[in-house]
Amino acid sequence: MLEKIKKNRFLFEELVKRDFKKKYKRTVLGMLWSVLGPLMSLGVMALVFTQFFGNSIEHYVIYLFCGNLVFNFFKESTSSGMTSLMDNASIFSKVNVPKYMFLLSKNVATLINFGLNVLVMFVFVIIEGLSVTWKYVFLLYPIGCLIIFNLGMGLILSALYLMFRDFKYLYDIFTLLLMYLSAIFYSISAYSQEVQYLFYLNPIYVYIRYFRKIVIENTIPQLSFHLLAAVYAIIVLIVGMLIYKKKNYKFLYYI
Image 1 (cartoon, rainbow, N blue to C red):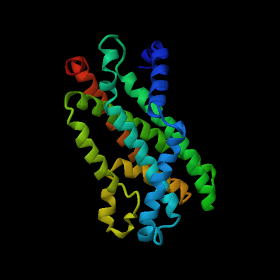
Image 2: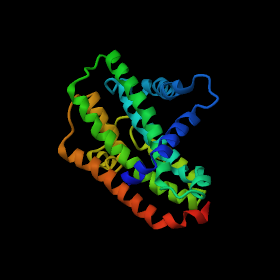
Image 3: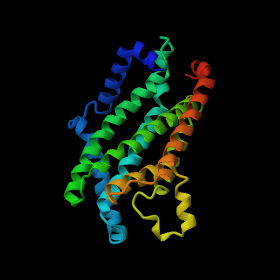
Image 4: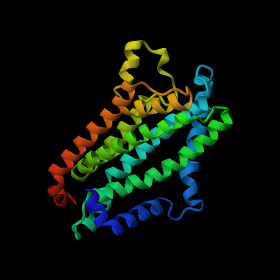
């Protein structure tokens, strides 16, 4: 895969530039929207939910920021990845290039946005009075797992969407449901221990919880937590690669 990307390096770089620029085409603020959008969303959620959960959750704004940051990265990456093949059908139907390059370019573009928002989160952390310690290095772990997880989901979704256009509408409903099941604006401490364990069946909650442990609690998660985060990422990537490999030769029939 790396050899093919290196061979088509120029095309890959141009795809990343195009995807990043296309998002802010004909906007006055341009790339600033990659920061302002999540901040506005955070502001609305803080305004609505602080009165309900703010008193029971310490550093509630940062708590919200971590959840919003991770979930938005997942949603943006997988949603854009889902349509990556269809959006570039005019290219791969005429030129023989690795089709996963279109998915990777989408993920790189969303990763840039995510990186900018992580920097903004650090500013909020300092304003909130939380310490930025050496443990923040461990944030690279859930970010790496999330990138792999998003790639795997993108492989699955792009293949399904190419064959079933209805899948896009179903996925919108799914991500809405997933948002409420990821404890972004509420704490799971009010639930019984058995119910709390069920939340860990949600990979996005696992990555959000990892962020909160480092940023808010200033603790490094246990080894079992690291393994769970990695297992979710690896399983989804393997499933995505198998589906992609099996359906790859049929993609041209569906465009």
